[in-house]
Image (cartoon, rainbow, N blue to C red; front, side, top):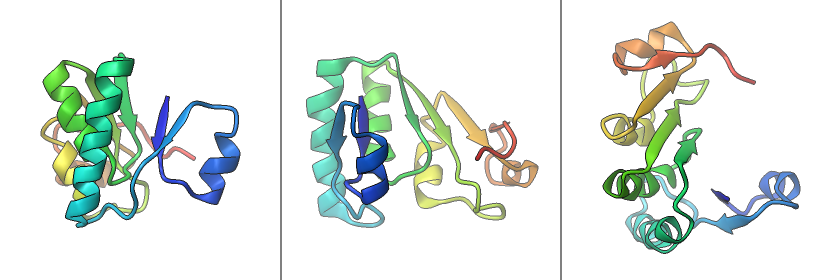
Length: 121
């Protein structure tokens, strides 16, 4: 099950997958945060995933928050291009993620409990 934004690349790459489109934009948009929280409330109890994985989209936070409450493990991968500072979503998900992955050693200054996995393409 994928939850992502309805954009051209996602539509083509996930054409044969089960997808739910999240509300966009999410960064600092309280109405869409609430819409995506409601989406998480509808989807997570129904599908009960073993793990929630995010690569840094703003939609991650409501899913991580509810996932934490439901005992679903969470894995967050901080984005490649934010070396000296964390993203808003990364800062929100860091305290509640079961596993927080970074791609650069320098990112450990912001996320000291992170695990360096190296650069992913």
